[in-house]
Amino acid sequence: MKYKDALALAIVLLQTGCVSFDTVPEMYARSQWKGRPAQDAINFFGPPQKMDRTADDKNVVMQWYRDTSYDTNEVVARTAERQGDVIVHTNHWATVNNPNRCIISVTVDQDRSIVGFEADDGGLLLSHGCQSVKFGPP
Image 1 (cartoon, rainbow, N blue to C red):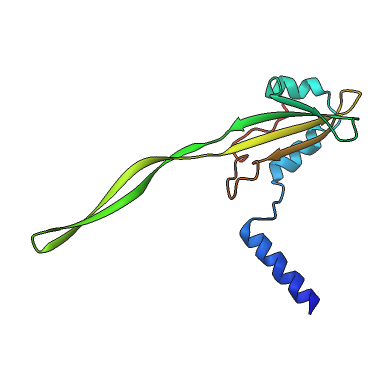
Image 2: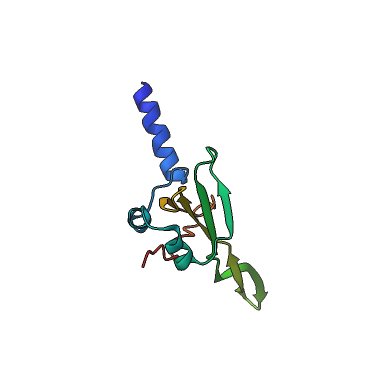
């Protein structure tokens, strides 16, 4: 019975988006960045917007934030009014901003070599914030 419960939980997590999988471009970029000099990442992404030491104080994590927000034209309200014997429905449209972001993290060791690469949408539900970002390297 425990197997069925675990399977049901896994299906729920997958359907609700609580489990994320790396995309093929992200996996490819991770393999391409590892072992390269940190300067290559700085040359490609620009100066990092944040730098922190890892918990073990052996590596440094450089981060870049990309705003991938987009606008859509959507129906925001609908009214209905009677005109004679006919009910007329009117859609009211507006431009809606959809916030999105991508956080690129590159971990660098003491020899200034890249040992890790991560691209994350910052936990925004169903955002796919990193799809439009180029991961490099050149």
